[in-house]
Image: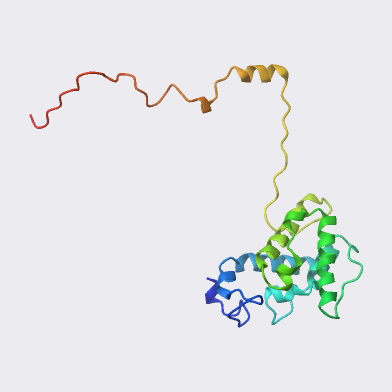
Length: 197
């Protein structure tokens, strides 16, 4: 239960932006976040900074940029490690571009404000899992993997003869002549059933 782990969230009653903490907490999965964190740590070869929550460790984009540089060496040429908010937001922008270059779908990417304003940390975690799924598509990647292997297209080709034969088959969507039916139903006078005699 999220509320049992007091160290999971910073000591806030409201998230930045005014949303109550309990509203956001119900949607987050600490096990999934821990799995994503452990995966990132194993890829980049570094631990998350001690004393920081999951979202605060990722917020400046440095760890995310390091992750993408491990997956595509040199894709992010400059990671901003100091400077103002603008520089840190630039890290998130570079991370998004690297994700697209790696093959992550645009729809799987979180918005920068989701992480920066801590509005939707679930979307951040889902993006990390999307990166993990995309790793399966890269034969040069040797693991560890995150999440299940994505399904692949299983295209089938049918000959004209097979298509014509299939047109003669009545599918089960049309119904069936087996099972419960009205055969043997009597119309007219009802049967007399007398109990106890």
